[in-house]
Length: 434
Image (cartoon, rainbow, N blue to C red; front, top):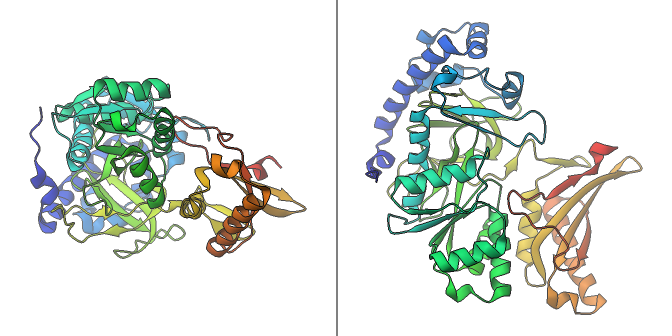
C-alpha cells in the first residue's frame, strides 16, 4: 500500500509555485525537442525553451486544442517512443475521430496517486470496498478509479457499468462502502434501490461521481436516495483521466493536483488570462506527464478558481463545479443556454417530477424551438389533467425566469425516458439535421 503524503496537498503557495516552475521548464524543453507541432507553434511565436523561466511565463506559450489530437491521430503528439507507452485510452469518437492518449508506467503511477488523493479525501482507506461502476476499456473512468483504490490498499470490486440488478445485489453481498460511477447512473441506482426496498441493507458511505456535469440539486437527490455523501471528481482523457481535481470532505470545490497540472482561466473569445475568481474557460498544462503531455490545453469547460486555503487544510487551488462547456452551450434565439441551467430548475421543482429529462432543440419557420420533456412521478401520473398542466406551467415560468426565453414543457409518463448506465444523453439538437 502507498504511503499517503497529505503534505504534498498542503504545500505553501511559494513552495508549490517553485515546484511548478521547475517542472514547467523541464516539460517545455522536452516537448520542444520531441513534439513537432509544439515546436512549430513555439517557433511561430519566436519562442525557445530558454525563454521560459517559470510559471510567470506560462501565458507566453501556445494553446493546444482537441482538434490537434484528431489532426495527429493516433500517436502523432506522443513525446516518447511507442516502446515506452504501456497503455492507451481513447474517447468514444461520437463527434469525430477518437481522441487517443498514451501513458508510460510512470504516468499510470501518477494517475493512481491522483485518484488515491480523491479516495482519501472522502474518508476511504484500506478497510473499504470500492465498487467501480464506471465503464472499463478505452474509457478512462473504470481503470482510473480502479488503480486509485488499489493504491490505497482498498478492496476493488471491478463490476463496470450496466446490469443494475446485479450492481445492487453486489453492493449488498460484498459490503460495498464506496461507489464510483457517473452521477446520472447513481440517480438510476437510487431509483432502483427504492423500488427494491433494500436501502437499509446497503453499507455505502460515500460516492465519487464524475464524467458528466451535475448540479448541487442533483447532489442532494443522490445523497438522499443512497444515504451517502456524494463527491465530485473531475478529469478528462487528454489531461490524465479522473482525479485531475477532486472534492474533499468540505464539498466546496475540487482541489486540482497542482504538483502535476497547472490550471488557468481564460476569456474563451480572446484567450486572455483572467484574474483569480473570474469565470471563464479552464486551461490545463501537464508538467509531469511523459507519454502524452499537453501545454495550455483548452478544455472548453467554464468555471472559476478559488485560491483560498480550504477548511480541510489543503492549499491546492479549488476549481468550482463547471457551469457548462463552451462547446456544449446552446444558442437559442440568440440566448446562451446551458443544460445545467435547465437541470437546476427541474430539481428545484422536485416532488411531482423525477430528475429524468430530455432537451429537444429544433427549428420551425426559421425560428429556434426549445422543448423540455420531464418525467412525472407515479403519483402525478395518477392525478388529474389539471394538476399536470399546473406543474407544466410552473416549470415553464421558472425556465423563462432563468433562461430569459420561452420553452415548451411536456410532462411524460414515468420511466419513459431512457436511463443511462454511462454518460447521460440530455440534449437532442435537431437543427443539425435541417
